[in-house]
Image (cartoon, rainbow, N blue to C red; front, side):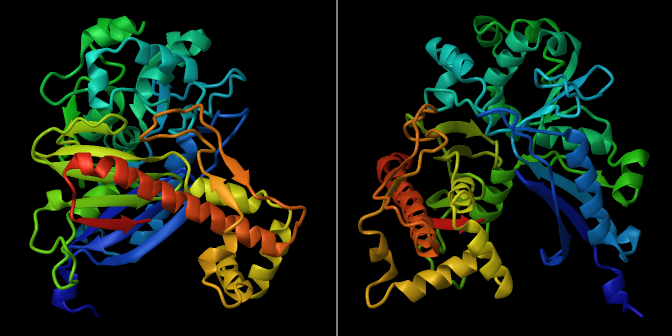
Amino acid sequence: MPSEKQAAVKYYVGVDVGSASVRAALVDGAGTVVAHAERPIQVWEPRPDHYEQSSADIWAACCSVTKEVVRGVDASQIRGLGFDATCSLVVVDKQFQPLAVNSEGQSQRNVIMWMDHRAASQVQRINATQHRVLSYVGGAMSVEMQPPKLLWIKENLPESWEKVGYFFDLPDFLSWKATGVTARSLCTVVCKWTYTSDRGWDDSFWKMIGLEDLVKDKYEKIGNHVLSPGEAVGKGLTAGAAEELGLPEGIAVAASLIDAHAGGLGVIGADVKGHNLPCENQPITSRVAMICGTSSCHMGVSETPIFVPGVWGPYFSAMVPGLWLNEGGQSATGKLIDHVVRGHVAFPELEAKAEASAHSIYTYLNSHLDLIKKSLPVGFLTVDLHVWPDFHGNRSPLTDLTLKGMVVGLTLSRGLDELALIYLATIQAIAEQDTFWRRCRLQDMRSPRCSCVVG
């Protein structure tokens, strides 16, 4: 039987929605992860640079992983739930039913993913306005943000546009599914929608870019009730959502965060005492978080706003209350490594050998590099092979979505050795680009003393 001490433990559930999977963790009051689970989610790529998902598929995965991590736990000990997710755009009608974001009319595909680049011409026109809100995104809006996607829908899918009831950032959609409340998080609307903490929405911006419809209904479609990240949403978990998630009705649901920002908050706010790091006993403004996944994001906070060309922000209270956030990074890093490895002709051989050795493909590649390096350090294996990693454009500091990737030094060889080498060269290119970003931009963010990496 559990002791009284064990019975008094309070648990919290965190759900993290990435680009390709959903993860949940059950965490106790001391921050210890007690259980975790993961489920894949579907991605459609109907044409180049179009990436779509299904909000129903994502919610089903959230329910599945949540039920798994709380299995066997006394429901009375579960006190709260929080979501983070990619900054993808969810489109629903006035009855909250999914609306198609594609010309095929497939309504179950109602999510335009963050990495979707279909709105290239729309973002170019938005940036040509030089509107004052652009100063808060490094001087040029990214195609990853929501205004160009909204404009694309209006111009290309007029039927869906007329039927729209709500546009959600994915983290806010999940909060709505859990609570029935359409409130938005300050994190999402500030970082991806041009909202500011002090002035709210800027009517002149939306009218200038041709989305005056959103102003007329007092921003009901994109959010006129904004909460700080972590603030309680409504009256907590609804009965319907509680049943789907396997959680108690009425437990607190926190206003959400974008996935990278949840990682940034955890890293920048981490207790580093006893690890002999330069930022020990220094304020959190001395740190930069590097969040690695499908893309990569560098994040730093400051007490005063810092405007840096090519770096998103400054965003007030979007991640850490009372502090300004700046962020940059690259659109495709983990995605690029995956693309290079899985697209190589020797991938089936790699997959078979990795499975036979009971290792992941990347563990196997790392071991293979050690085998072929001979007497030289492994890094010298690619002295004649170089990768330019902007296969999906450049997020920062160049803010150019038209840039393309490049590989120099290819031969006619097609074996596993060559796959391992191009894998290594891709990692080196990403690392070098990270170094370039730091050299060019972190000095403008007042020389942080410590970098922390999570992925």
